[in-house]
Image 1 (cartoon, rainbow, N blue to C red):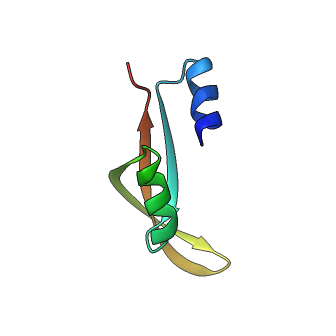
Image 2: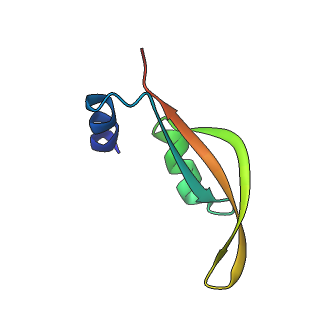
Image 3: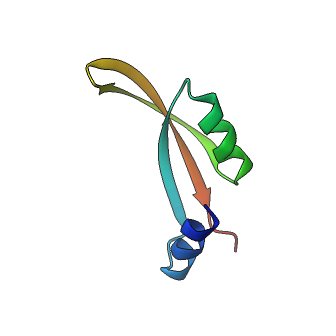
Length: 63
């Protein structure tokens, strides 16, 4: 995760976004622990024919 953030900073990207399954608490805990913040947006999706809800996380480059 540190490498990905460093690449983003090097490329001048001020923010990154990702979507994660709402019920995937392990992944959500990981993202929160590595500086990502729950943004509040949700979307419905289909994975292998199963309907799922995803939530969006954002990471902002520190000034």
